[in-house]
Length: 153
Image 1 (cartoon, rainbow, N blue to C red):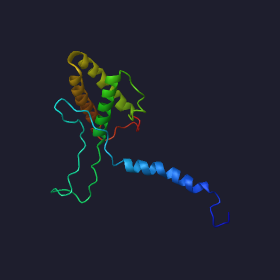
Image 2: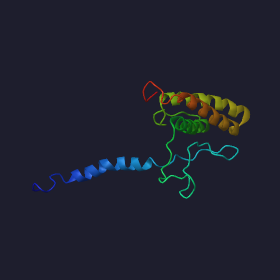
Image 3: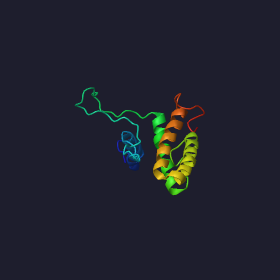
Image 4: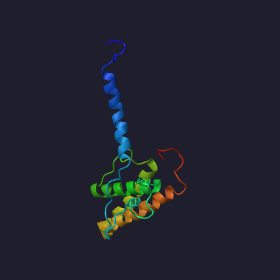
């Protein structure tokens, strides 16, 4: 091709191919996580705030969702994976679960306690314990913001 044409016809396609994952990742950030398991009372375990309807008093001009705190995100992740491990009986790799090393340590403690409660008192009691212990341990872990020791901790 001449100087004005693209000497590499695949360059434009490559650029689109590289930009697509970033675009999809950016649009996925506004989505909420999978629904949490219900407790016996029927209330979900998610703690993320839902935005007020646009016509309600006190609603802001932008309907952007509120960011999830690190402690709330930790709680949701640990509770989700604790239920999965309790049901399946096997752990996965902490990185494939999206957990840090510290969150994985919390998960293991929560699952150990939940297994004992499940044997004595049943699944509903074990799931309540998972919610309580995940919340307490994650709140403690993030009480001063992000833990030190690098992002993997």
